[in-house]
Amino acid sequence: MKQLITILFIGLISFSIQAQDKVAKIKFKSETIDYGTIEKGANGVRVFEFTNTGDAPLIVSKVTSSCGCTVPKKPDAPILPGETGQIEVKYDTNRVMPIRKTITVISNADTPTVALKIKGEVIDPSKAQVMEKKTKSVVEQ
Image (tube, rainbow, N blue to C red):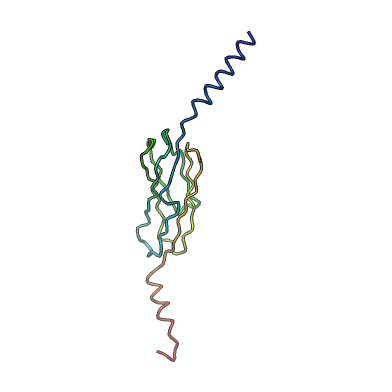
């Protein structure tokens, strides 16, 4: 009886190892999005595009950001092999400061965790004009 259980256990393990030959692979077009210099209140929505280059359906289970000012949105449905998907990222452009944020993508891919980056700078155009006017000295005016 013990031998039968042992044989069944070994068979089950070898079957599960063979069943895992197919894996999903996630390949991003770019892992960094540069907003450049944008004005306060501008459209902060950008998109990371990716392709499932594996041979199993890709399931994006979780997408998080390093800050509450960045809201990522993951695809709801699995991405089949060869198909493309998108992760939409919305940055709050009402915050005037440099942008340096990380978006973490967790999936069933062979690389289960991928770190995406956004960068740039949000400026307030009304304050920029005041700074330009102050570049002249009192003598030059």
